[in-house]
Image 1 (tube, one colour):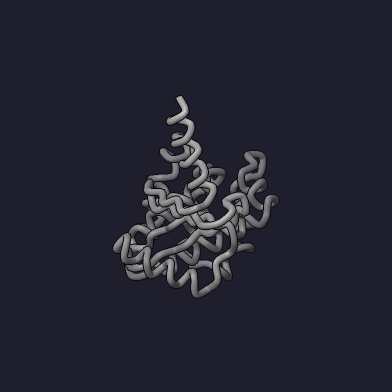
Image 2 (cartoon, rainbow, N blue to C red; image 1 turned 90 degrees about the vertical axis):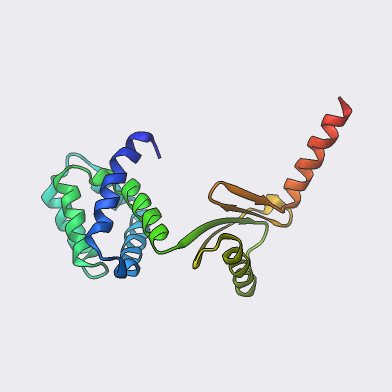
Length: 183
């Protein structure tokens, strides 16, 4: 996300979260995830909302027709305000920042996991349990990506901390060590 997008997204994300009480963070997170998945699943919708030639009333009508049944009325009103102010084209950045703030407020830690193979449900549960102890977070949200190039093992990223237990990482470390000793 560019610095301009962050500067625009931050105040809108904060304003969005202020619309809801702290007790309704589940609603906020569900709405944000629903809108985010709809945008990522429809390039046409994303393109239409960011098109400056489409007037704001048309964009608001589209938002109401697409999201009114799935999201809270406050969320629809907020999206309408973004249309009126010409900021709907920054919706991806605003959603990302709002989700980040909502997860933080709900004490949900997002952990990125890259694995050579897909985890089973029991492996995910065991990993979540270990990560809860490690981070002190009440809930853990896993973002799992499968990368067969890792050969085996996995890489965990919690915030800025990276734990690399992959065979590829171990081989990289070994080659670095051997390369340094050869000199």
